[in-house]
Image 1 (cartoon, rainbow over the protein chains, first blue to last red):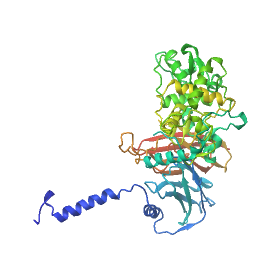
Image 2 (image 1 turned 90 degrees about the vertical axis):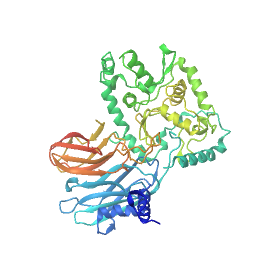
Image 3 (image 1 turned 60 degrees about the vertical axis):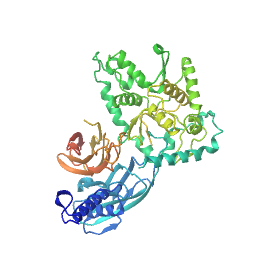
Image 4 (image 1 turned 180 degrees about the vertical axis):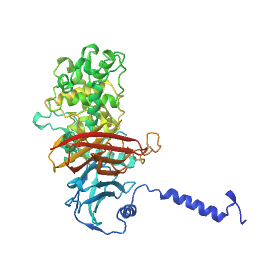
Length: 155
Length: 265
Length: 106
């Protein structure tokens, strides 16, 4: 076997290594998020801090009529004073193509920590809400949802 | 989501759910006391979205319709308001009696058809395309002026032959699955088709925001979804079959309150 | 200009916690959907929402494709003074839409 062959003078080993890398790149784009990618997204939000269960209430219907639009409310037990308030609330999902749903940034002027929105869910899965408090601690709540499909659609 | 899986699951579900009911094909006359709007069959969250004007996405089309109502259009340079004034007064109860008999065509027209007739003949403007944002917006804005009022469609003897045609279409089996509208909506309302509850098919809130569409749509669009559901070739938009069907369904819903702009899954 | 519906109470008492709702029309195209021609429809979403009260930021949100079409957000703030509550939505292309509401605080 000749030492130098193939494209741009690369060795066979180098070409194989680069094509394997290219294949890995194609496969690396996830068709859907996984527990690992959700964990990674959560780590990006909380850093090295530990996430504790509590203080956060994630209100979302357990049986979803249509995954295109699911109402969600997050409430955090907090006095919302300049000394003790919720800095941000982040929502994560397990099985959509992407693990992040939204990050909300609050101020002590909020009066109370309560945010509502409508989200999309591609499949039955868990949703996690994590609140970052002004003292640097992180608190969470999880909801397990079943997503049903409507009958009689466009195609 | 994998569309093929959804289709397969739905077909299996439909066949399974309705195999026992195939003999009950005729439209049973629902006594007025048993009539329930699609609103009653949806989740509490969807209901909450509909009744709150500050979160009902259909209201985005209503506010656009409100702006279009006063916009000059066509060679005439006239707006709807130039002839009809304030819609809150002039359009009160109007949508709730559609489809109406249109003498010039000797047949019924639906509200969107009537809007386009006005555009062409009174404003000298081009008709708005079916399912266009503008047409849905105007229909939603006019429809909202009937919200809460009872539906009065069909109170006109000239409409009777068309209402009868609409009823025949409703009861006729069609499509590869060979179901009629009545098979689901008369014989099996309240039961599940795949994982959804089958409503009674009273079009009380059109045009409406369907969560599945992620947007506003007309009754014709919804009927096309039904026809696709039984694997029938949907009629083209604007077909007289849709008008006759709407006339039948709205006559059947007479007395029920209008809900436009409704929200449905 | 996308149609937007904002809901801010016209009047409030100083110190009241008021609820603010913002709804805007936008397809929030995820970038994961295939169109009728089989090709992937490119992503096009509103990715940032900000709310200011007399110029001071009181709330903001980073939005991702998992937010439903025609995004709706509801949050609270304390009525501190009369003035203007301003809303800004920014999309992937950096285009912004601005809406405002006036509030009287007594």
